[in-house]
Image (cartoon, rainbow, N blue to C red; front, side, top):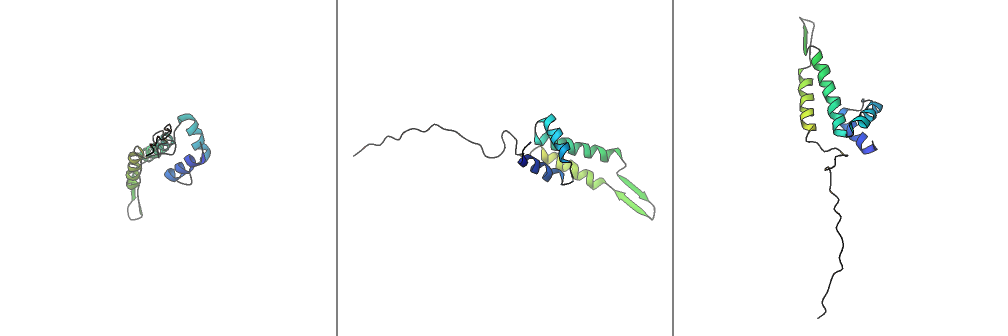
Amino acid sequence: MDSAVLAWLMGQLGPATDQSDLQTRYTRLGSAKAVALEVLSERRAALLAEPLQLTVSGVATLDQSNNLTGLERQIASMKDATAPDDPNGGDALVVAPLQRAHYRRR
């Protein structure tokens, strides 16, 4: 994984994300987008494993519904995102053979 891929992953997943974990996942999965989707899916699963809303009457309310919605939107948009290591991402490099120009003298 090069520095551009790491920077992209950190931008998608946040600066507190463990870089060595990202490297391990990248080695196993082979693409930045697959790594990001796996991490985001795990975060979503962790939210779903706990109650999304908790209310202690008159004391406090904890609501994770918006966090879940945000993760689901990020996962959906990730499928259309272009990662630095995508084979079709970014500008395409086209190689064309050069030919000698033929000029006619008048």
